[in-house]
Image 1: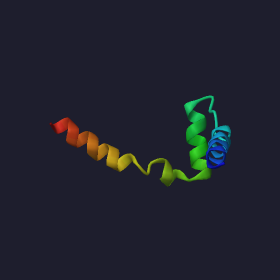
Image 2: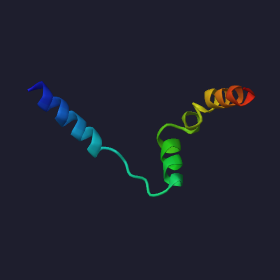
Image 3: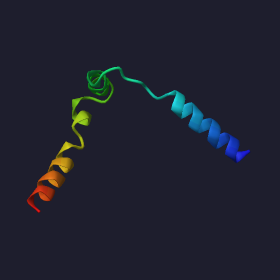
Image 4: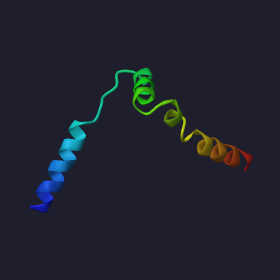
Length: 56
């Protein structure tokens, strides 16, 4: 019974995934739903990691 519920929940989540035709569509959707700040929320840690790795 529990397995059936888990499989059903996973299937529903997969059906809710969006398919974007272009990268631009992804950016526009993120900006509309979450805002410009959330689009670049992970940029600072990524840049720090890249700079630190490049120095090695």
